[in-house]
Length: 206
Image (tube, rainbow, N blue to C red):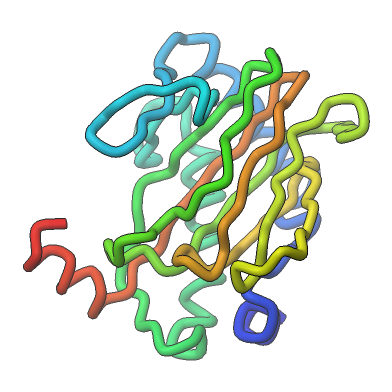
């Protein structure tokens, strides 16, 4: 399913990815992290923080930190999924990924304007988002992700519902935005690297 939908549509949605018990553990660890004060304002290029552009607060988690066992389990499950698909996702050969970016929109009407994750060929090829928002109602809470597959005018409106996994190409094919959120909105993002593009990016210092 993932291979076919990514190659055909540019994105794929998987609901109930971990199941209720495991996803609840992930959410609790994210809540604990947020309450501990380790989150900071999301950054743009050159470490400029601009709330008008993106309003999330983030923390980078490797998974070996104390109290992050469930987050590590989530990342390992995503790794296994990507590994099973590797070699069949476009022309990419995936050989690594980022740490987990744990993000919270604090519910004050902030979002993230339309953007592209990898506009400059830095090696990121697949964006994976995991949502942690029980009983989310986008009509009241906002916070949808609007995806513009193939950079067209049509929009796919994705609710950030609990235990939902979203995958899409990271390059210019998939501009996207987070609409203003009016309730606490949590997500975890992973970016997977294409071996060749990542190597070229490193050589060029980008």
